Amino acid sequence: AANSLSQQSRQQQAGAMAALPIPARELFINGRWVAPVRGKYLDVVCPATEAVIGRIPAGTREDVEAAVAAAVAAHKSGVWAKTTGAQRAVVLRAIAQKVRDNKTALANYETQDMGKPIDEAEWDMDDVAGCLDYYADLAEKLDARQGSAIDVGMEEFSVTVRREPLGVVGLITPWNYPLLMATWKVAPALAAGNCCVLKPSELASVTCLELAGLAGEAGLPAGVLNVVTGLGADAGAPLSSHPALAKVAFTGSTATGQRVAQAAIANLRPATMELGGKSCLVIFDDADLDKAVEWVMFGAFWTNGQICSSTSRILIQERVADAFYAKLKQRAQSINIGDPLQPGCRMGPIVSAAQYERVRGYVQIGLDEGATLLTGGRRPPSCPRGHFLEPTVFINVAPHMRLWKEEIFGPVLSVSTFSSEQQALQLANDSEYGLGGAVISADEERCRRVAEGLECGIVWVNCSQPCFCQAPWGGVKSSGFGRELGEWGLENFLSVKQVTTYVSDKPWDWYSPQSKL
Ligand code: NAD
Image 1 (cartoon, rainbow, N blue to C red):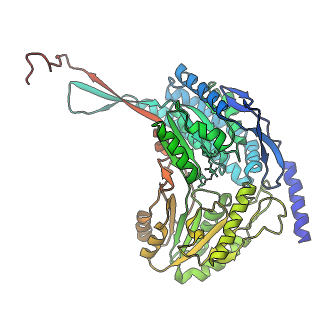
Image 2 (cartoon, helix red, strand yellow):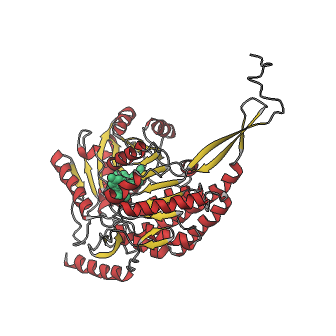
Image 3 (tube, rainbow, N blue to C red):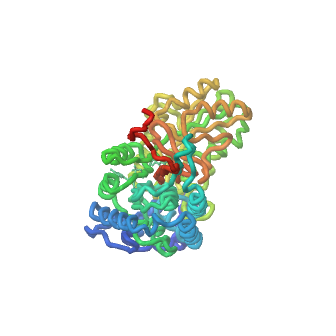
């Protein structure tokens, strides 16, 4: 233990040296850094060290009002809404380039802010830039789609379709992929020509504030992207209920999503909801178990299991269960857990003290419910400080247990067994959630059947978790509605207007005496 302690303090020293100072920012409203009206701030706490490393403005209703007013003025001015898709693409690509130029710093802030391993945070920044570039391409393609003709079967009429921005959109995002989840909304919203007010999670807002500054430097006009940080109740709630919004796009927990959706519908505004999950991976006994375990690890422990689509339930076919447990235990116990700023770290701390207690509470619930702890469940001895939890696997988890049913949002995996394909599908689908699902088998036809049978918005076959900005993302049941990413992400932020033109020289002739009727 002494050895590992000194190893951790050495690592923490090295990590501390690598930690960049968190920039002191204000709210970003109308292209400027603006102090919150009530002058309050929230501490930024590093989950690896539990140290206060900075602060973010605690925005409130007054700041939301100012941000929405700035966005409304920008929208009405036409400075963004009236540009062509090609013009918007230039700015989006410039923002992407800024993100690439600042990748090292942005990833460093992200890791300090919410604890994900630096290698993952750097990957996220690549994804952020890639997503901006992708929507730049779609913005450009939008120009060619403007004015597309609809055949209504009457030659007197020419009917065409314009795709217009909705107006001002409210974007509310979570902490697990702070900048990436925000970009999944900001990039398509901007590509479509909207003006935005972004409310990132109070647990991780640092990189979203940086994005706003970088977007301004890249040439995005003032007022087009505004960022109001603050608590959900103080800043998120007044944003989601603001009558000047044309739409609310939300990613977060199912409970908050219900509130946000109700606030939006009270104003008769559309909302998209990317909510929680309890995704199940089904492994058949013909699978290559080593490859399967690698995908299980990636699905369950990537970003510490703090992923909406995280592989939080495994169904393993009975015949190979014991061999699978042995391999999984060995791999989980050898994960590189510790200072997330160290390259090569594969598991950092849980995001916050409250979430740490919540996740550890689920470990106790699992034990109390009678599930078998295969591995983990403790603070790693090598990490005396910070919100660290060993990768945790419970086996013999029964379908009625809370461990099997509830979203934990941490590195706690629940495993159960099945005998037949039919039983596997029944158990996998017996969930209030329907975000992700996965199947691993050597039998392609079986994979196809299971993919078809899983009740969810995303299915992975012979893998789990990889995500591409070109493909649709979203869930069914309590995992939400609407789809982000891909062309669906752009459609979310477009208003479709029909333009019907009477092109005949003849009079319409309905009320004149000569009327046929
Ligand atoms: P959360 O619901 O606590 O918070 C999400 C956002 O909503 C934050 O910005 C928060 O400040 C804000 N908020 C809180 N109360 C509000 C209110 N009353 N009105 C308006 N806004 C309010 O979620 P979280 O803990 O930040 O994120 C974790 C959750 O997000 C998990 O349930 C996870 O599954 C989900 N998630 C889903 C996806 C997806 O694509 N489906 C992706 C990532 C995370």
